Length: 314
Image 1 (cartoon, rainbow, N blue to C red):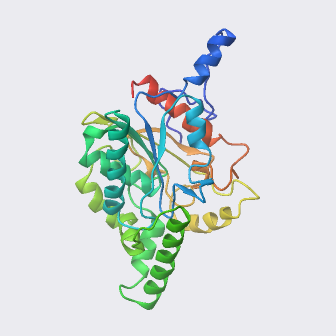
Image 2: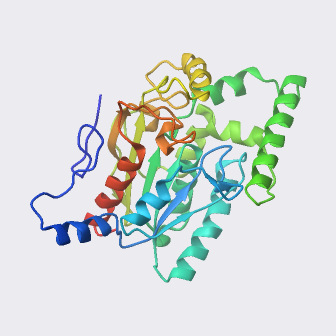
Image 3: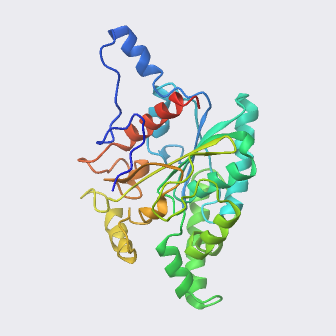
């Protein structure tokens, strides 16, 4: 099932450009196609980063694509593994800084995976700083993998301790490689992303949630617009080594999914589309652009969404 909003994304996921303009006018239109009123802030998911070695972007090439269309774009960095509230507070400090430095008043927040929950937190506690929230492949009703880990790893057990150590160590390494040093708490992260953890989070921060699991949520609350999209592709590239892992994880899920997040669990606010031919990493153009060649280009999907925000006065 695909849910399409009235915007600039066609059924193929490619941006719809204006036709019939003169060459000069067309070039100007392309340069301002993604020029939103408020800056766009990109927020990474679990085990994510702003950029590693200053070269490898979490949102692979997406920021530069948006900037080429006139958008002002910032990427943020929060703890790789921690609770949504802890990650959200770290993000909030950066949003406050961006708003203060730019004088923009507000920002458009776009979060992938766990980052989509972080941006919901920021919008809930400081709606005055947020023009819009867009979540991409985020587990608003919980992720089955997190629920499985929570249900099967005994508190204080040897297995839990070993996995926690490995995950925290990975987070610390990723943090250092991206030029930061932040505390890690993988157990808190798993709890936050489980179905139980998301029920608690949603009870505190319900804005934008659909009334039924696979429905659409309110498109606006407290002056903040809400959007979401996700994919249901799994094995999308024969040269991407992560596809097999996502394929194995997907077997834990009872509904179509992107390898880590169920289709209906990703629904939030205005659902632009929930069945793109992308897996969880393709959604942000990882790894190294190994994506589904027969599916939509994630850069085009982001660019079209920026145009949607622009046309909405955001």
